[in-house]
Image (cartoon, rainbow, N blue to C red; front, top):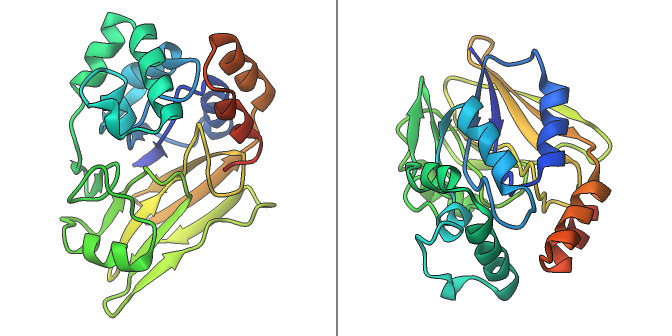
Amino acid sequence: MRYLIVSDLHANLEALHAVLAQSAGGYDRALCCGDLVGYGADPNPVCDWVRLNCAAVVRGNHDRASTGQDDLEWFNPVARNAAIWTLEALTPENAGYIMALPRGPLTVETFQLFHGSPCDEDEYVIAAGEADQAFGYLETRVAFFGHTHVQGGFIWNQSRVETILRPPARGDSQSLPIDPECAYMINPGSTGQPRDGDPRAAYALYDTEANEVTYRRVVYDVAAAQKKIHAAGLPPILADRLSVGR
Protein backbone atom coordinates (compact mmCIF):
# COMPACT_ATOMS: atom_id res chain seq x y z
CA MET A 1 0.00 0.00 0.00
CA ARG A 2 1.20 3.49 -0.84
CA TYR A 3 0.23 6.28 1.55
CA LEU A 4 0.26 10.05 1.22
CA ILE A 5 1.05 11.48 4.68
CA VAL A 6 0.26 15.15 5.31
CA SER A 7 0.24 17.19 8.50
CA ASP A 8 -0.31 20.73 9.72
CA LEU A 9 -2.31 21.84 6.69
CA HIS A 10 -3.41 24.96 8.57
CA ALA A 11 -6.14 25.96 6.13
CA ASN A 12 -3.65 26.64 3.31
CA LEU A 13 -5.51 25.54 0.19
CA GLU A 14 -2.82 26.63 -2.26
CA ALA A 15 -0.21 24.48 -0.52
CA LEU A 16 -2.56 21.50 -0.39
CA HIS A 17 -3.39 21.80 -4.10
CA ALA A 18 0.33 21.83 -4.96
CA VAL A 19 0.92 18.69 -2.89
CA LEU A 20 -1.99 16.90 -4.53
CA ALA A 21 -0.84 17.88 -8.01
CA GLN A 22 2.71 16.65 -7.41
CA SER A 23 1.70 13.41 -5.69
CA ALA A 24 -1.13 12.48 -8.07
CA GLY A 25 -0.96 8.80 -8.98
CA GLY A 26 1.72 8.14 -6.38
CA TYR A 27 -0.46 6.89 -3.53
CA ASP A 28 -3.47 4.72 -2.74
CA ARG A 29 -4.67 6.28 0.52
CA ALA A 30 -4.20 9.67 2.19
CA LEU A 31 -3.65 10.19 5.93
CA CYS A 32 -3.32 13.30 8.09
CA CYS A 33 -1.44 13.90 11.36
CA GLY A 34 -3.64 16.80 12.45
CA ASP A 35 -4.02 20.57 12.45
CA LEU A 36 -6.29 20.83 9.47
CA VAL A 37 -7.15 24.42 10.38
CA GLY A 38 -5.82 27.48 12.18
CA TYR A 39 -3.63 30.27 10.76
CA GLY A 40 -4.81 30.08 7.13
CA ALA A 41 -7.83 31.54 5.36
CA ASP A 42 -9.37 28.43 3.78
CA PRO A 43 -10.52 26.21 6.68
CA ASN A 44 -13.62 24.90 4.93
CA PRO A 45 -12.12 23.88 1.55
CA VAL A 46 -9.19 22.21 3.31
CA CYS A 47 -11.46 20.42 5.76
CA ASP A 48 -13.76 19.38 2.91
CA TRP A 49 -10.83 17.67 1.18
CA VAL A 50 -9.65 15.91 4.33
CA ARG A 51 -13.14 14.77 5.22
CA LEU A 52 -13.72 13.31 1.75
CA ASN A 53 -10.28 11.92 0.97
CA CYS A 54 -8.32 10.98 4.10
CA ALA A 55 -8.74 7.41 5.31
CA ALA A 56 -7.42 8.23 8.79
CA VAL A 57 -6.92 11.53 10.63
CA VAL A 58 -5.88 12.48 14.16
CA ARG A 59 -6.67 15.82 15.73
CA GLY A 60 -4.18 18.58 16.40
CA ASN A 61 -4.10 21.33 19.00
CA HIS A 62 -5.35 23.95 16.53
CA ASP A 63 -8.20 21.65 15.57
CA ARG A 64 -9.32 21.60 19.18
CA ALA A 65 -8.79 25.33 19.69
CA SER A 66 -10.59 26.31 16.49
CA THR A 67 -13.70 24.35 17.44
CA GLY A 68 -14.06 25.61 20.99
CA GLN A 69 -12.70 22.48 22.66
CA ASP A 70 -9.71 24.20 24.30
CA ASP A 71 -9.20 27.25 26.47
CA LEU A 72 -7.37 29.78 24.29
CA GLU A 73 -5.56 31.23 27.29
CA TRP A 74 -2.49 29.17 26.44
CA PHE A 75 -2.33 30.36 22.82
CA ASN A 76 -0.24 33.36 21.85
CA PRO A 77 -2.24 36.38 20.58
CA VAL A 78 -1.68 35.56 16.90
CA ALA A 79 -2.77 31.92 17.25
CA ARG A 80 -5.69 32.96 19.44
CA ASN A 81 -6.89 35.49 16.88
CA ALA A 82 -6.70 32.88 14.12
CA ALA A 83 -8.53 30.28 16.21
CA ILE A 84 -11.39 32.66 16.97
CA TRP A 85 -11.65 33.63 13.30
CA THR A 86 -11.68 29.95 12.29
CA LEU A 87 -14.34 29.09 14.87
CA GLU A 88 -16.62 31.67 13.26
CA ALA A 89 -15.73 30.66 9.70
CA LEU A 90 -16.17 26.88 9.90
CA THR A 91 -19.40 25.39 8.62
CA PRO A 92 -21.36 23.34 11.18
CA GLU A 93 -20.58 20.20 9.17
CA ASN A 94 -16.83 20.78 9.19
CA ALA A 95 -16.78 21.89 12.82
CA GLY A 96 -18.60 18.69 13.77
CA TYR A 97 -16.17 16.60 11.76
CA ILE A 98 -13.16 18.18 13.44
CA MET A 99 -14.68 17.84 16.91
CA ALA A 100 -15.14 14.11 16.32
CA LEU A 101 -11.53 13.47 15.26
CA PRO A 102 -9.68 11.01 17.51
CA ARG A 103 -6.58 11.88 19.48
CA GLY A 104 -3.54 9.82 18.58
CA PRO A 105 -1.96 7.42 18.53
CA LEU A 106 -4.11 5.84 15.83
CA THR A 107 -2.97 2.55 14.30
CA VAL A 108 -3.18 2.18 10.53
CA GLU A 109 -2.10 -1.17 9.12
CA THR A 110 1.35 -1.68 10.71
CA PHE A 111 2.14 1.91 11.76
CA GLN A 112 0.77 4.70 13.95
CA LEU A 113 -0.29 8.32 13.56
CA PHE A 114 -0.24 10.99 16.25
CA HIS A 115 0.09 14.77 16.33
CA GLY A 116 2.66 15.64 19.01
CA SER A 117 4.01 12.51 20.70
CA PRO A 118 2.56 9.07 21.47
CA CYS A 119 2.05 9.99 25.12
CA ASP A 120 0.95 13.63 24.77
CA GLU A 121 -0.69 15.03 21.63
CA ASP A 122 0.50 18.54 22.52
CA GLU A 123 4.16 17.68 23.18
CA TYR A 124 6.78 18.98 20.76
CA VAL A 125 9.29 16.27 19.84
CA ILE A 126 12.18 18.33 18.54
CA ALA A 127 15.37 16.84 19.97
CA ALA A 128 16.74 13.29 20.08
CA GLY A 129 16.42 13.18 23.87
CA GLU A 130 12.69 13.89 23.64
CA ALA A 131 12.33 11.28 20.92
CA ASP A 132 14.20 8.72 23.02
CA GLN A 133 11.48 8.91 25.67
CA ALA A 134 8.70 8.88 23.08
CA PHE A 135 9.94 5.68 21.40
CA GLY A 136 9.12 3.80 24.59
CA TYR A 137 5.41 4.49 24.01
CA LEU A 138 5.24 3.29 20.40
CA GLU A 139 3.30 0.14 19.62
CA THR A 140 4.68 -0.19 16.09
CA ARG A 141 8.10 0.12 14.46
CA VAL A 142 7.01 3.07 12.31
CA ALA A 143 5.03 6.14 13.34
CA PHE A 144 4.20 9.48 11.72
CA PHE A 145 3.75 12.71 13.66
CA GLY A 146 3.52 16.46 13.13
CA HIS A 147 3.14 19.53 15.36
CA THR A 148 6.71 20.86 15.02
CA HIS A 149 6.32 21.88 11.33
CA VAL A 150 9.84 20.50 10.76
CA GLN A 151 10.33 17.78 8.17
CA GLY A 152 12.53 14.89 9.30
CA GLY A 153 12.15 12.80 12.44
CA PHE A 154 14.09 10.20 14.40
CA ILE A 155 15.47 6.66 14.15
CA TRP A 156 16.03 4.28 17.05
CA ASN A 157 18.75 1.87 15.93
CA GLN A 158 18.55 -0.36 19.05
CA SER A 159 21.43 1.45 20.74
CA ARG A 160 20.65 5.17 20.38
CA VAL A 161 18.31 7.68 18.76
CA GLU A 162 19.49 9.48 15.65
CA THR A 163 17.95 12.57 14.04
CA ILE A 164 16.70 12.36 10.47
CA LEU A 165 17.85 15.61 8.89
CA ARG A 166 15.41 17.40 6.64
CA PRO A 167 16.06 17.17 2.89
CA PRO A 168 18.39 19.82 1.42
CA ALA A 169 16.70 23.11 0.61
CA ARG A 170 17.51 22.74 -3.09
CA GLY A 171 16.17 19.21 -3.42
CA ASP A 172 12.53 18.22 -3.71
CA SER A 173 12.77 14.53 -2.76
CA GLN A 174 14.69 12.32 -0.34
CA SER A 175 14.17 8.60 0.22
CA LEU A 176 14.52 6.79 3.53
CA PRO A 177 14.69 2.97 3.49
CA ILE A 178 12.93 1.43 6.49
CA ASP A 179 15.09 -1.11 8.34
CA PRO A 180 12.75 -3.61 10.08
CA GLU A 181 15.24 -3.90 12.95
CA CYS A 182 14.97 -0.18 13.77
CA ALA A 183 12.10 2.05 14.88
CA TYR A 184 11.10 5.32 13.25
CA MET A 185 9.24 8.50 14.19
CA ILE A 186 8.75 10.31 10.89
CA ASN A 187 7.59 13.89 10.52
CA PRO A 188 6.33 14.64 6.99
CA GLY A 189 6.67 18.36 7.71
CA SER A 190 3.97 20.98 7.46
CA THR A 191 2.02 21.28 4.26
CA GLY A 192 0.49 24.63 5.13
CA GLN A 193 3.06 26.46 7.27
CA PRO A 194 6.62 25.03 7.22
CA ARG A 195 8.96 26.24 9.95
CA ASP A 196 12.20 24.57 8.95
CA GLY A 197 13.52 27.39 6.80
CA ASP A 198 12.07 25.98 3.57
CA PRO A 199 8.82 27.69 2.53
CA ARG A 200 7.80 24.93 0.14
CA ALA A 201 4.87 22.71 1.12
CA ALA A 202 6.03 19.48 2.78
CA TYR A 203 4.64 15.95 2.82
CA ALA A 204 5.74 12.31 2.73
CA LEU A 205 4.92 9.14 0.83
CA TYR A 206 5.13 5.75 2.53
CA ASP A 207 5.28 2.53 0.51
CA THR A 208 4.70 -0.35 2.94
CA GLU A 209 5.60 -3.00 0.36
CA ALA A 210 8.87 -1.36 -0.63
CA ASN A 211 9.56 -0.40 3.03
CA GLU A 212 10.47 3.15 2.02
CA VAL A 213 9.47 6.66 3.03
CA THR A 214 10.00 9.53 0.61
CA TYR A 215 10.10 13.09 1.88
CA ARG A 216 8.82 15.60 -0.68
CA ARG A 217 8.71 19.41 -1.08
CA VAL A 218 6.79 21.41 -3.65
CA VAL A 219 6.59 25.08 -4.56
CA TYR A 220 3.11 26.59 -4.30
CA ASP A 221 1.44 29.96 -4.88
CA VAL A 222 2.49 31.66 -1.65
CA ALA A 223 1.32 35.07 -2.83
CA ALA A 224 -2.23 33.82 -3.36
CA ALA A 225 -2.34 32.30 0.13
CA GLN A 226 -0.97 35.53 1.61
CA LYS A 227 -3.55 37.62 -0.23
CA LYS A 228 -6.36 35.54 1.27
CA ILE A 229 -4.95 35.92 4.79
CA HIS A 230 -4.81 39.69 4.43
CA ALA A 231 -8.32 39.82 2.94
CA ALA A 232 -9.68 37.78 5.85
CA GLY A 233 -8.27 40.25 8.36
CA LEU A 234 -6.04 37.64 9.99
CA PRO A 235 -2.77 38.79 11.62
CA PRO A 236 -0.34 39.88 8.86
CA ILE A 237 2.51 37.84 10.37
CA LEU A 238 0.65 34.69 9.32
CA ALA A 239 1.07 35.78 5.71
CA ASP A 240 4.63 37.04 6.11
CA ARG A 241 6.00 33.82 7.56
CA LEU A 242 4.83 31.78 4.57
CA SER A 243 7.53 33.44 2.45
CA VAL A 244 10.39 32.35 4.67
CA GLY A 245 9.23 29.05 6.17
CA ARG A 246 9.65 30.23 9.75
